[in-house]
Amino acid sequence: MHALNWGASDGDMTRVMAGDATVPHPNYENTMALEIEAAPAHLWPWLMQMGYRRGGLYSYDWLDRLFGHLDRPSATRVLPEFQTLREGDVVPLGRGAGLTVRTIDPERALVLGGTDGDFQWIWEFGLYPIAPGRTRLVSRGRAHVPGTWRWRVFMALLAPAAFLMTRRMLLGLQRRAETLARS
Image (cartoon, rainbow, N blue to C red; front, side, top):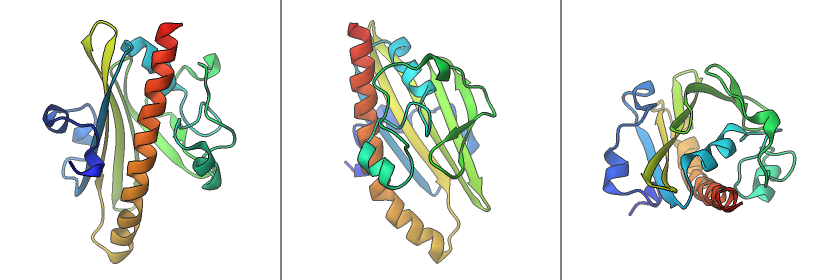
């Protein structure tokens, strides 16, 4: 299996997700997934609070801090002050720009997106109950990337970093949601 599709089943790869139509003709896409021994209600608070100067990114904190994406370690508890997001809100990913909330369907889907000229990108999280107390978490990134050499180099560098950081983030979300479910 290709690294950009870590943990994703054939069903995850072909699943229509809430943000897919936002980038209808992507030339970059990844889908990563895992099962979590917790209900969507135990996972949702962690998604609501993610971001810079919020709950963090639940990935490699030292690396996120090195690149300016975090100002402190990722949260290990639910932070009530960051439990509200609405369409149009911006989730900061670092000191610079953030991603805009495009779609929010509580305990089901969170779609974040951004644009930079001809570059258009979405990052979405889908929560799919598979049994009582078990959820399939699917992360999908879709982008339409201009064909210039600058963008090709950017994506060549971004893809391996995105794999490492997203995989770690999913595992961090899994650990936090399962801990919350047990408490």
